[in-house]
Amino acid sequence: MKYERSSALFEEAKKYIPGGVNSPVRAFKSVGGTPIFVKSAKGAYLHDEDGNSYVEYINSWGPAILGHTHPEVLEAIKLQAEKGFSFGTPTELESEMAKFIIDNVPNVDQIRMVSSGTEACMSAIRVARGFTKREKIIKFEGCYHGHSDSFLIKAGSGAATFGTPSSAGVTQGTAKDTLNAKYNDIEDVVELFAKNEGEIAAVIIEPVAGNMGCVLPENNFLQKLRKLCTENGAVLIFDEVMTGFRLAFGGAQEMYGVDADMVTYGKIIGGGLPVGAFGGKQEIMDCLAPNGDVYQAGTLSGNPLAMRAGLSTLQLIKKDENFYKNLEKNTETLDFEIAKILNEKDIVHRINRKGSMMSIFFHTNAVSNFDEAAKANHPLFNNFFHHCLRNGVYLPPSGYESWFISQDIKEIEIEKTLEVVKKFEYSNK
Image (cartoon, rainbow, N blue to C red; front, side):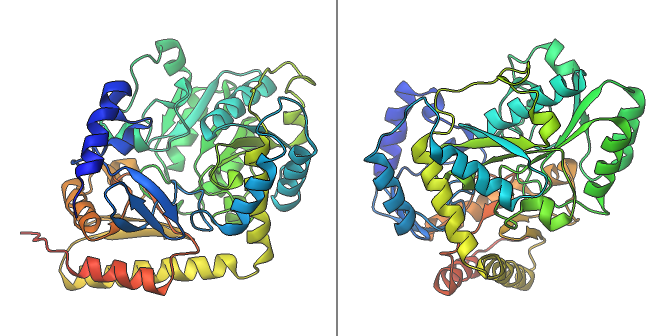
């Protein structure tokens, strides 16, 4: 494949945009090379500025669960756009969206819309602190909850890709209130609660991590967290920006049978448009202004285009009783067949999968936390990524990211992907 146009556009972008990108992982720094510039997308495919097409497994990092530019969602956006792009006033559509989520998600009594997952998680932490009158939070190494200062302490995703577990510009005062625990290590959490008795406002976690690659909770880890938070009066926050409406209609709460006190959303609930949301139990959400003294606001919160795109997406999913079953079946096929090919090639690897999320780690051991993810053979992943890219399969450009499968990844796309994997050559020696 040729990338002359993308290369030229990247050089041009670097003149005006820091690093040439508006989100760091897009720069391909982790895998090397020049990022492709996408011109359009349809169904299961991306089309770049050089005329190349790719079966793709990012789907806008999760939102395009129906595939790109789904015709019914597109039509809903067009109809809404004719009525107006943004009002800065209440609309009936916001209530319709909120009611739909509350009716279909466990343990959410009220919900507030924002414009990004970062904003949702930042606001949830502020509300938890206001509710408990405490300042410290516990997060997990490798989990990424957006780029708010409180979360950029041993974060995953782009921060892990660049080898910077913390960000410059985060103050020591902020850092001291963020306590890090190891994912899937309940004793680590127990110790933090013991050392900070009566000081911890909240525990926030990706119930299935997607920002150190796809990493699953083990040994009833989420259930044990629920118990610890209850015993210590801390708010349990599930960051379901990735997992919400992807793993199941009720997200990870439904899948694992764990009741969170607060939940954050993004991605799918906007149908591909910028969106976020945070919700939870009535007594906690009552702390928010204008009812309470925890302030949060946003000009584009509840934006009508995002609400209409998200609601249309969620209604289409809800209407198909086999939606998640079919999505998981196709992801399972990818998992099984890719593993089979790599085993035949004697390429050491592990594949983690839950629902329609999965990751390949080129690692001899199981991967259940950030340390183990970091020890994977990332140079080998980079080779694998570029091999796939050259052959028309677009993977996340980092070994620390999850794949997201859409409903448009069907037999023909799976077969094409497997044919590409079959051509991959690498020696472990």
